[in-house]
Amino acid sequence: MIRSSDRDIRWLPGFNWITLCFFLFLYLPLIILVIFSFNATRSATVWEGFSLQWYAKAFSNDDIQSAAKNSLIIAAVSTLFSTVFATMAAIALGRNREIKHKTAFGGLLLLPLMIPEIVTAVATLTFFTAINLSWGIGNIIIAHTVFCIPFAYLPIQARLRGLDASLETAARDLYSDRKTTLRLITLPLLAPGIFSGAMLAFIISLDDFIITMMVAEAGSTTLPIYIYGLVRTGVTPEVNAVSTVLLGISVIAVLMSQWFAKKQ
Amino acid sequence: MQDAITINGLTKSYPGTPPVRALKGSDLSIRDNEFFTLLGPSGCGKTTLLRLIAGFEVPTDGTLKLFGENISKLPPEKRPVNTVFQHYSLFPHMNVLENVAYGLLRQGKPDARRTAQEMLDLVHLGEFAKRRPSQLSGGQQQRVALARALAPHPRVLLLDEPLSALDLKLRQSMRAELKRLQRETGITFVFVTHDQEEALSMSDRIAVMSQGEIQQVAKPAEIYEYPATRFVAEFIGDANFFEATPRASGDSAATYHVSDSIRFAGPAMPAKANGGKVTVMFRPEKARIVPGRADGGLGGTISDIEYLGNQTEYRVTLDDGLSVAVRSENRQDGSALADVGSRATVEVDPEAIRVLVA
Image (cartoon, rainbow over all chains, first blue to last red; front, side):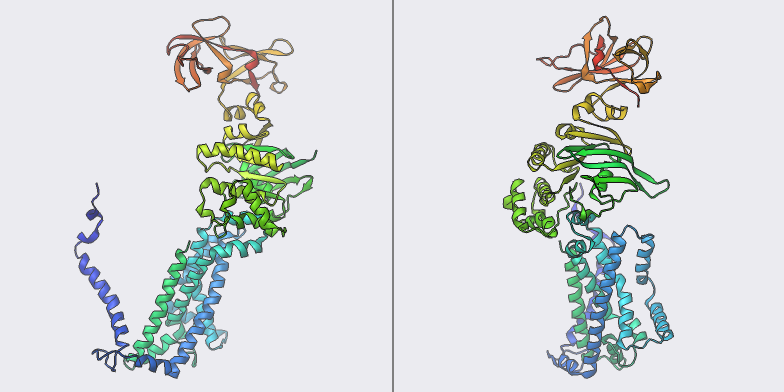
């Protein structure tokens, strides 16, 4: 008989210490950041009482406002486009029997996940310069849309794989043409995967630094780039406050993504 | 009367090296208002034929007519044919009534919901209209799938092994239910199964298929009693087979020589045989076993006895080494006619002998 203690991996030497270190190094800085964003004074090391003044300051700062606006517009638009493209790609590769070399296309679609981001960033910048593209945040939206596609694609493709193709066949059998079947059967059943993919794409775009940094022109600063600029002149509670907001949005988006992915 | 479905030289190949020929130029007519069964082992092409009729597959060659109209090129949504799928394929995001009304709504029929409710009542699921398919048992889902496919009143209903996922008791009651629905609706049913018992008990006619070819099309009794090929004889029921050389003995009779000591008197040899070797066959229950030696039969030793409840099967090793199976109805006390190792004689009437060329 297997006792529950046999399956318990706590007997592994150093397990407790390693676990403790992991949580300490990963979450302690985050917790400190969040806590000191509520500090009453400028100090980033000594707690002097609760206050929301840094949030007030951050929200009334014009530069932060415009950076946040840019970030949200870029994230929203590139999420929309990348999710639409990812859905189309998933349906094409998952359902169209006439497309050949599906494995190769699927691999190419996911390859950007494995390419070092700095390489993509440099290449994108060179490309935009070469074709003389200068659309302000439009440049960033195009770059984000492209690299968000694989992130949006993964949950959609997983959902479609779990979806019995005979449901669509049944709809065709019951007098629905391709479009009606897509509208009434495939898309509604795919919806949790699409929302999950959209949430992922949104936070990936919102958080992105390297590519944005390369591609961004003057006047199209995003929140991560603005934060980076602030930090170079010293960490202020204002930065903490903005970072906490960004963290909050990401956490909510991830939780929503997980919730949609698990639906039904 | 016009046939419901007529297929001519219908072929389906899938690309590959070599290409897979799932259906090899078949001809078949399915009559209107008929309970027709496609029977065969997996991979015989029966499901391919069903999917071709439904429009889920495009034929490589040949024509497919529905009540005289060539529908080979029509997409599935344009064919007045509906399907009951093997795993039901009910839409999980719709309730039972919405599932049943789906086809009617797409056709733009007025009173779709009322008709759907009537269909649900017909399959005794009227009170489950608001449930989700996942809240129903397998048998109930099966009935919803039937109601959904019947609701648009198709001219032909296709059923793809619809009973295979149900347990034995439910399967048996669903057989009667399907027969009842077919009679009440007057719709032509094309039923696909690998289960010979299902096929024999439900069908008006059966097409037995093997390796993409239709072997025989006939009524259930004819399929069993007069199989056209060795495959049909082996696939449906059990049989004893012997290679034999025919010797004519009059216009309507012949003798079939299996070996020096074994010969069967049987019907005239088929013209196709052309005097060459043929296969002689008889069903185990059509032969008699007589304990001890008797004149005119095949002598041998009982090598095995299997008690089957209503019958007992005796395996007899004939004197020259060949083995035959004989089944007899059990006596009142269920005791065997003879013991293992004892001598016995197997008697086969000429009327029980079938001669197969293919």
